[in-house]
Length: 499
Image (cartoon, rainbow, N blue to C red):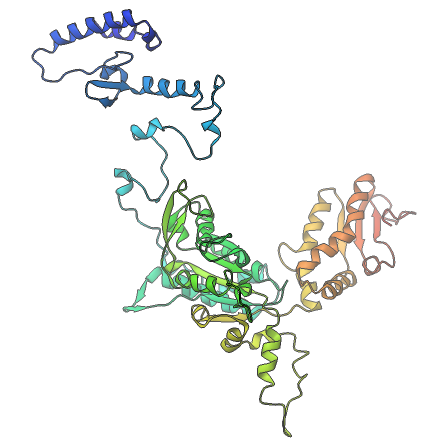
């Protein structure tokens, strides 16, 4: 019997048992005669009776019983039609296909074709066991501090001291990553603690820095972190977010930056009899992350469970930057500064520091301990600095100088409608004053502009003759309207389009 005779046997004919038995007997008889002098015995699929050289590798289910991949797949597909897989003909009350993370069998894994999770725990194939070289950071290509600050100046207005501190810290950190040791001297991590009032640009500084350095960045909120065993995010979830930002690449993740915002919410609670599951205990749990340790984190999820694979991340080369507004810290600093200078001829007045807008820049480790941060946590954040409070002139510069300034964004939006938008200096100062009154910092600028641009953005598409709009101080102060120029005559229309 030739190979063509074997190929004419259709696997769908397995239900014709008499025909299948006749074919099987005939094939076995001829194969036995052909292989009398050969010790190798050809194996056949128990269901479709095709030989191994035609059906492919067989799965040995029991002694004398082997099944080909095609028939085994048909078997599992048919199980779905009886309620196990949720098929159309399912009559079972339990639809397994709708249960998350549950499947019967991935046949590809039997033949080495299944999907693999990069660098995750579990059975490793021979290909995975091969050592992989981590992408090394060349010390000669690390951006020096003055260039890092120059790049930050293009996007962030002011905060010169904060940008200088961050540039030097990041430069030293990646030199440490590139060299590992220097003359057998282990260099410690340069983790940072950044204080500053709300809207002063803490998060924007870190986000811009990570984008310029082209490293993975994870921004997380400390308010959701709780002690292990309680509802909320585990401490390891901050590393899991960085792994996701790095595309599940472990080597790239281990050289990234993690920014933990609202770190002041982890301060030790005072005068409380309840268990502090989101304060001091979280600080203690984060000590190993800040210093450097092997942490087991879930892949593709924020919490560990039996259905999610995990991988090990070493945090030794991950740069941690913690930030927070630290409300009432100014009172602690003022109390310390006035402690020994309230009596005598040379005594300072108690209200001497009330007008100091940048009082947070005088913060010390003792002030942080008084606020509620434990000494072990502060010790792992050796670089402590504060951002400046924004004044009117800085807010005006923020409105017009950065590459992606808010006014430039609106100018681009109207440019798409072939309309030129301008803000005069009086309007910019009026917007800055309103932002200072709201005490929201730079974060309040956009909401103010949105309020005054709403009518303009609504009315301009109605009239194709409008060619230019000038936002004036009177319009911001609600004492008049904007200047609107026509395309043809260049004169103001009789009726202003915006009330």
